[in-house]
Length: 311
Image (cartoon, rainbow, N blue to C red; front, side, top):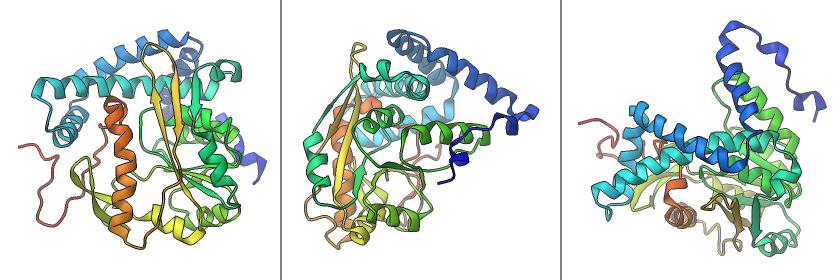
């Protein structure tokens, strides 16, 4: 890799259209200096403000939670919606400390379980596919994983804001072996075959292409078949991992699980169902920490209405 690709070039983003982003990033950089408990309180406050002001995302979260937790009454669902916004806002400040926090600070913030499963998978002599999800702790968990996993390469989707994308990529490349675009399947396959550890979170709705409908939280969900396809092409074991923000400013828990058995099976729906069930287990363990503000169920089976259309 060209080392220049890892550098952030602020001079490319001096036009006035970038100034609001610069302001936001500057505030985040300052927030990264605050004590961790204070960052959590700040995230709580910002999250409640977002809940009050961002009505479209509030509608999305309410729709998702109503469909996924039908056993909850209306008051309990609304409490979960508010908690979701608080968790999403906290993740903004977690991003800041994951980018700018010192190793000394970061190493005190987490504990990790299940490294023996990673080591066992590594002993097979192949690359590894780390199967994660869009928990709100996704960014900071990458910083923690990088302390233990050699050759870690996250698969990611470009951000729409070019300044944020440039800084995010540069900061991540300082931590990881490389970054892989989700559209560059050829490079992803090549790197896994070369023994790298690819970190993949497939739980987003990319439409019908390369997807099948499989249950997730009791809802028929357009689910990418890429996880099984990548495992089949490379022979790499799929190791699930969870990340969770612990209560009371205790920090974080990272947990790696044993590699999936009999995966891929050759049945796309069965494989997608298994991958969804793995992610669902952690969602149910810490429901407020999932990214419910994302339109996870946008694509519907033929004949089903748009779940997010206001009635």
